[in-house]
Length: 443
Image (cartoon, rainbow, N blue to C red; front, top):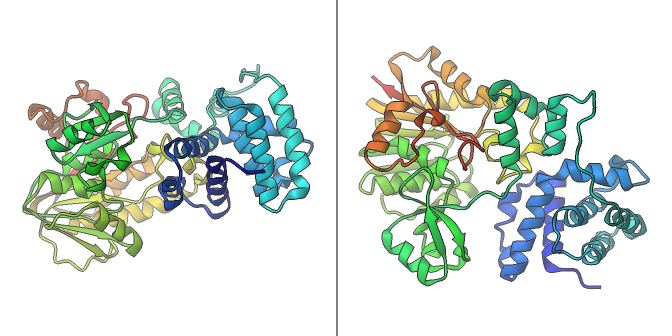
């Protein structure tokens, strides 16, 4: 029996995410998806992201219908059942028999034929049972309820409840469970006109005048996109790049995948720009994405850059937990642990201090993450500046007011973009990823 190409690809990606800690965002842009028809590619992406967003809720549904504990199921069996359970519970347009049959066949394809009857029985039981809404019990804590109904780890929800309050934490969790808008940055005005002729419809951005939102059309097959004149980039990421400003020598010390490097290049077309990335294969991604002649991509550790310093602007967009991007990267919430934050903090402080050393007198550094966690944001800046003389933290309000005066920033409520002296976007408050940024000047 043939299996839908979309379900086969989705199953293989989910298995790699589960067994190899692979990143769904990278696998969903692999060559294998390019071979699918547009409809199958769209379904494969829907299935992967849907299962990862709602994994804990799906596991609750499966556990209620299964005759054995989930921890005793092989990964192949569990992921095949999750795949069908998501379709049964969340996709009304998918026939139940198609979802069930393909998942049973995927179990067989994975050499787990003896488990096929079990998978079939569980899925038919799920299909026959009505979906039950999550209801609070008398003794269920607010954190546990929100974590359960929005499919987030309890430890993460507890942190957000403490940091942002109950209502804002709910907004974050609910935003994470929706398919986010696709935001774009265009290199030139001609690109927008050309996209329109190829059936791509755009709307204005929410934060920035230069940003666009994809409304309809297959962007990835258009000429402007393939020529590197259109970038898929979250608006908060674009805003962070705008904070870097202008100069004659710029450095992006943790450059991959290259979106902010490209935005810096667009604003500084004649500057000398160095983009450093520690991993060669990711440095290759930057070279592919940023094709301007004034950009040099080097493979180097941000802590040991083979550079003499003297940069007017330095961006330290450091490796982080990514908790501000769970709408786009739902697999993160199932692999991240609270203990990871301390290790990330130590690395981030070291990178910030190394970045500051690359500044020329009067130069500015922007420290940024796509994390919502204080350990990776305010605490890093505080520690990074504690023993570093000659540096001053600037108030991001001043920078945002300059961007608004120039017409670039169109978001009216500046207070909602600020946390003290820092830039902070929060999913659900703004319709974008959660980013943090600090602007630091060398005196």
